[in-house]
Image 1 (cartoon, rainbow, N blue to C red):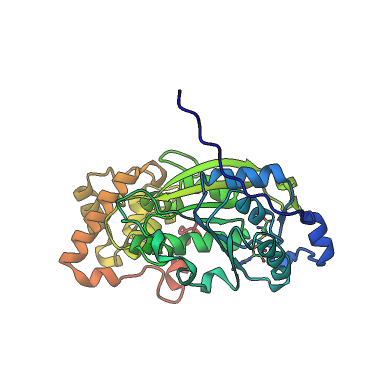
Image 2: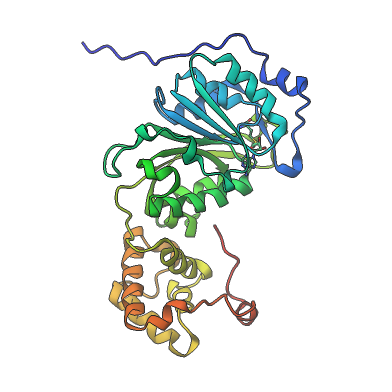
Length: 343
Ligand code: SAM
């Protein structure tokens, strides 16, 4: 009978609890930076478990704060941990952890903004796998402020689409927290009430799994909303095989009038004079019923729509540069039906 391999564990020497660290280093959470610390060890472990087996992995944690998740990562015997933390007040508490595991795990502490940090300079080259192989032993984990996590997600999707940044090493997986509703949108399939642009963008380049919720009450201070934990694995082949910016533009415009027939949003991809004709032509080429509403369009149907759009702009290259939102908000005023971007 096969015996299940016991997960490796690293035991850290006794460290002050996260609660004590916060008190010791006077790490009051700054509301203006949307800092909420996860205090419950069981839930911290649950997030890290969602990442799967990370033994001997290089793990990059974004926004480690006082280091609750960091400790749980280190317990799982990774090869190296890269910590990117914007708020320098947390550096001493992270150094405490790095010191405690000095002989066992290599820890790089990078004081900086994840949106401006190139983490590839800290990742050893030998983790690299081919894009079409299994994901490399590199995992990105983060419990970031909600405002940062959504911007970061979009930025990372673009990097994934170009196999840049951490994705030069292959299909590196991610375990991230989001505001519960954003997490639901990311995973929402066709017909789901939360289906939006972010759903199609995330699912075009990644397999998205909504793992579980964390109640706001598990954080200190308690945020106003609950949190959703999501894992993402880049796909070997995106469903829509066109550049990120083109996919984003088409999907954004189609969802810009969420409650209307999707052709209405699609029309805004084209200048007014040819709008109706071109949108109809695009839907015909894609085999989509113009009366379908945006949330009723499946990912593969979006693929056909973007294929058709790409065909049209190949025939009429000047159309590609048309941007409905461009003329100084004038269009938005003239078109009050267009809703705010929902991502
Ligand atoms: N990981 C800790 C936990 O779960 O208790 C802290 C979570 S707190 C919600 C978010 C952390 O991300 C804070 O430590 C904050 O300073 C950090 N942070 C915010 N924006 C950041 C950015 N752009 N780059 C890196 N870290 C950031």
